[in-house]
Image (cartoon, rainbow, N blue to C red; front, top):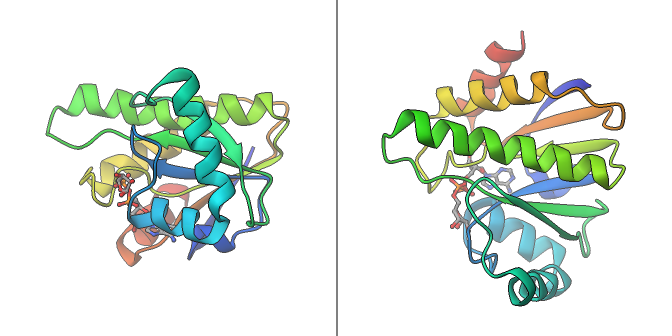
Length: 168
Ligand code: AR6
């Protein structure tokens, strides 16, 4: 899989699937979650509600898919990152699961390009450097015959710099 780095707003990215850093409720929030729901419209929330009625909340590290509504993507993959509480081993594994399970779900949907935000590095306070390393390792270790390109979308300067170094 090719790996690309883009600085900017994930709702503006052209990609088959974009990943949302959601919370377990799947009912929206701030940060990138808020931006995706605002730009994608009510159809995304409606589908999130249906998923909740069917399976209950989404566990940390897991991923579910909805329509992308008004966005140019086909799908939004919602994954729930861990809140950083300093339990490095446990929380790192959960963050790795977010990337892995999102990629697996994307593959099952025949997605060719997928864009990730820097999951858990905002409100959830995961250390950015460690989060970046986990994200890049997980993507590099994921061998796919289906997915052709993974785009890391960095919104803030600090993450952009971290990813530039990691991908060099
Ligand atoms: N495009 C790309 N990245 C963005 C955008 C955007 N439009 N806006 C923010 N980011 P956060 P979390 C970056 O807080 O830490 C929500 O309320 C931001 O700079 O969105 O996983 C959910 O509902 C940061 O690097 O997600 C949850 O309750 C990254 O996205 C909770 O926040 C993640 O920051 C999840 O917290």
